[in-house]
Length: 237
Image (cartoon, rainbow, N blue to C red; front, side, top):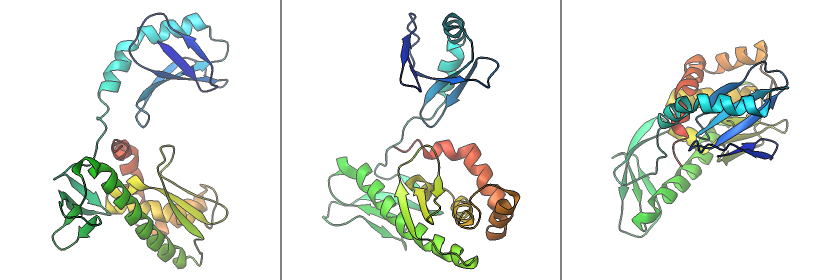
């Protein structure tokens, strides 16, 4: 098995363990540790300073059953399919394939997302629609919340990120992950409040969190949901 270091270097483990692994060298760590990165679906080994290669390899080999067991618990990647039920900005819709040529459209009255074209392209078409809807919704919501604190959002972009749910730059540009559109409504409100608060406080100080809670009553609930269930949104390819 080949282990890939974050530095780009690699070293080999003779035994075929059957899973890939990230390795992080840390000068602050005092012991070897293993964790599971649910977003990237991979085990992460942290190696402290002065730890020998032999000890690190032995540590991995002694914990390979734990790694396999925990990797197997990560939900499989999901693709949007015909008749699937999905949540879009807090409202449930059923995906229905339409043989009639035309654009993907949302029937809000009947709660149906109609997807045209070849059914083999359904996942991509649904994903593209969600990204477009996310840009419209997050742009609108961000502007409305920013107005409450006398700030202006310069630009909103929708990203396909795994490192963070959203971000706000010093230029007042806000990026959101498209997968947030699939989250519950209170989670979406929390994320918008969080990023808009960064327009005033570019940190996570007490003043920042006080502003987040001022803008969104369910901020704590939204943050907790993401901590516990956020990885499920990343199962969507």
